[in-house]
Image (cartoon, rainbow, N blue to C red; front, side, top):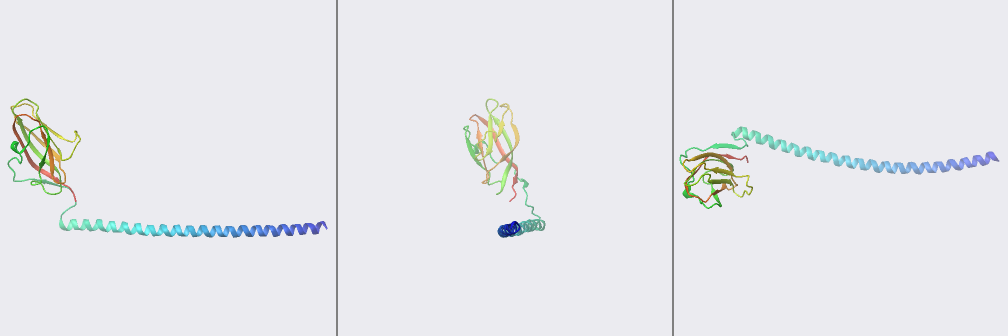
Length: 199
């Protein structure tokens, strides 16, 4: 009887184990299937994304190559150009063209330099009638930082004082100037050359 009961108990135990194992295997299969489906979806998304990125990159490379070829064929390189001005012997702006009142005013240089100019090289010549160390300031139109301005200063009121300066201009090719309220003998401003920014 002990053997029969043991056999029956073992049979029951085995049946329970089979049921449990079957449930476990079924669950594992479901989990594995879900995991595989998710992995396949993610892999497909990644591959699609890589294809798109590769296509975009290729388009960029084609555009760069086309620009390079066009520049070689036309001889026009997409870079900043330094242009020396010729044919200007006299000052472009003199004392009578300017306002002397210790306040900033606009100086329009668009009639001298072309569209696209970002930086202008000026030759300046100044002399005050009285006192030493009179000053003229030049800066980009709209600039507000005091450190971003060019200072022209007389050392005495006997001699002319020359200085070459580079001044940034706005898109309309305008700068600002301030002339200290004093008696001036001469203020000459002439454009020597300029920088045209790359498009």
